[in-house]
Image 1 (cartoon, one colour):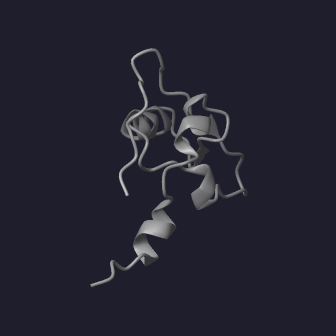
Image 2: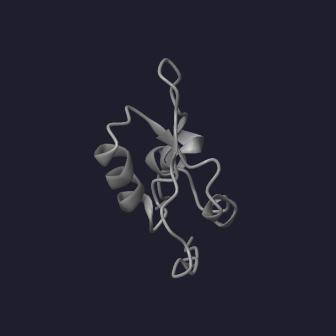
Length: 78
């Protein structure tokens, strides 16, 4: 199943730092987002241990995309 790419031209990466001792769940990390690599860069440059995509305006658009866990466990039939 193919999902259309959202128009990201008007968006900037906007990860939210996760407090020490708390771990972002797979749901809070949208690894298939076209800006994900840029968000990783922001987190790395700021020395963050973890971040979430939960507050990103693109999160609503990405909510219909399959999660990494869903893709990892999905086996094509045939």
